[in-house]
Structure formats: C-alpha cells, structure tokens
Image (cartoon, rainbow over all chains, first blue to last red; front, side, top):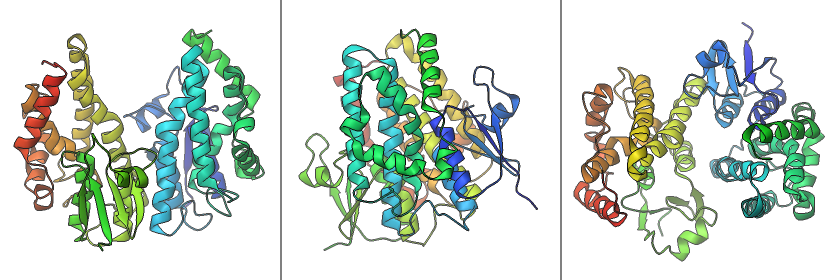
Length: 219
Length: 220
C-alpha cells in the first residue's frame, strides 16, 4: 500500500522548512498544503487540536506535530536511507542537545532581532552572535553538523538561513562578518537539492517580515 | 570510580526524573547534590551552556537537558524500555512529554508567580492544558499503558510537586471533582515503587516552597 503523506505548512516558516528538507532527504513523495494562518482550516484544527500550528504531518491519516518531533518521526519511519541521527547513543544525545538549544535559545533571540528596537535590539544581536559562535564551535572542522552528510542539527538550523537577510537588514549588521564559518556551512548545505529546494527566497522572506512588523506596529 | 554519575538537586523534578529512569533500569550511579545557589566547578564544566541540573556523566562524558538524558538512558540500557518501539507511538510520547514541559509546567508556574489580578486567567489556562492532558490519559493506567513510560516520568511534577505547591500556597488547581482521571493517575503513580523511591521528602519540599513564597510576599 502506498504511503499517503501530507504536510500542512506555511511557506515562510523555518519549522515547516525543516520538515520539507527531511522529507526530501528521504525521498518521500508528499502533498504540500499551504495553510492560511489567519483563518485556520478545519483540517489543521482537526490534525493539530492541541497547538493548531504548522508544520503538521499527516501520514496515512495519523498526524504528527512539532517540527523536531516530525523530523525524528520521518527518520524513524523511513529508515532505509539518509539517517539524520548518528548510531552512537552519546553522539545522538549531543545532536538532540544542540537541536534543543536552537529551539530554546536561538529562535527566541531571532524574533527580537526583527521586532525590537534600541537597546533591546542591540542585546538580541549580541546574544544571537554568541549563539552562532557556540554553534560554530560545535561544527568545528566538519562539513556538516552531521559529519560528512546532513544530520539532525543541520536540518534543524539551516532553514533559518533564508531569514538571515531579514535579520541583517532589520538589525543593520552582517552575520558573515561575525560568523563566517556558519555562512560557509549554510552555503555548503544550499548545494544540496533537499535544502535549496526547501528554503525560501530571502528577499521574499524579508518582504514578509516587513508586513509582520507593520501588523505588529513595530515601525 | 563510578561509571555513571548524576549532578542533581534534591527538590528538582527534572533531576528526579533522571533518577527514576536510572533506577527503573537498575543502573548503579553516584549521585552528587548540587547547591544551585553556589554552582560547583564540576557543573559549570559539564554544562557550560545552560549551567543547570540534571547532568548525567557516563564514562566521563556529560549529557544535559532532562529529556535528552532520558532518551539517552533508554537507548543505552535496554531493560524496562520507557519509549515505545513503533515510530508513531514514539512520536506521540515525545509530543506529550514536550507538551508537559513547554506548555503545562509554565502555565502552572504562571499561577504561582503572577499578580493577583492575573491569577484567575493563569488558572483558566492551566486548567485547559490539564484537561487536554487528562483527555490523553483517558482510561489507561499510565500514559505509557500498563507500565510507566517517558510521559509518566516527565509528568512527575504533576504527580507530586503540584500537590506540594498546592499545600504550600493554599491554591487548589487539581482536585477530584475537576480532574477525576488525573487524580486517579496521581494515586496510582505515587504508589508505584520506582516513583516512590525517587520523590523528595514531602514535608521538606513544602517547607522549602513556603519559604520561597513568603520571601517573595506571594499571597494566594
């Protein structure tokens, strides 16, 4: 029986992009369903009743929610190729730790970069660069966080790369100047089709951020 | 030299979760109590990023963040698995564990520390989340089925700490009328031997919480 896979998503969401990359890496055929977040569909509310958020993956009628949980599920359900997590338990734990770090610390800081002003903005930029430097330390000399191939942390973090232009323009700073290794890593990831086809155009993302700022009354 | 060491804090539900999992799997470990008001060089060395407990050390290699540690323990010591094998069931367990930590716990904290005029709203939110949790439990003995699993271990703060908070503060969030199913689970849970062994002394915890509440002149 063929697998039926649907992804409820929103084009600009880095969390949704994580799942798109994961599915592409595994060669899974799926239906992409763009969601209107201002007017949530009955399907989204049914499939993610707890959070009502995207991304939500529907596999043979059953839904999986929360992007990193979905990525791990995709890794477990389609085991045949491209494992995202290493086989050694300690390395797996480190991998999970860094993905958790990205969600707990990095994401919150990036929101401040495109919404805050003055001192709060400067603080957010500083924190963001500090986080990137920690990630650079973890990457070391490896081509990817996953080693020779894309892994869980790469999938968790690279979607934010298409938001970098928005952060830099709103925050008036250069990420490459401070963290060249991260930019080099991101460009390396972009050479992979699963990544380049999943990330959105940074200029489009920036236009969207400007719209959000207007809506939030930031400008 | 012990192969497995745990840096923890007696009153921390996160730290006790890890102990529960280790005991469940019969893993011998050396416990090191951390004074969170005066963090040891060991803690700062092994968890430089978050500087928190628990930290598990296995053969000298550190692992931080309780959910990460729990999965590591499950993958390393195979007795009494706490996560299901099936990818979908595993994803569901992870989802509910995350729901507990990211959504339930902060909502409960909010009640404790919010100003009087915002407390009712905070209560309503916490009640809504606990009802969602109760709905997931339904008529299962434990979240993990017949035996305790990851979600039950992570729900230790609802199973035990919440009761202590309620007694220390006079606030009543969970009671049999409002949450009959959750209360049934709590009774079953705290009587479970591996859970019972891994709870802090109730009176000590209540006294500690009372002193914190009075220090911040929190009044319910």
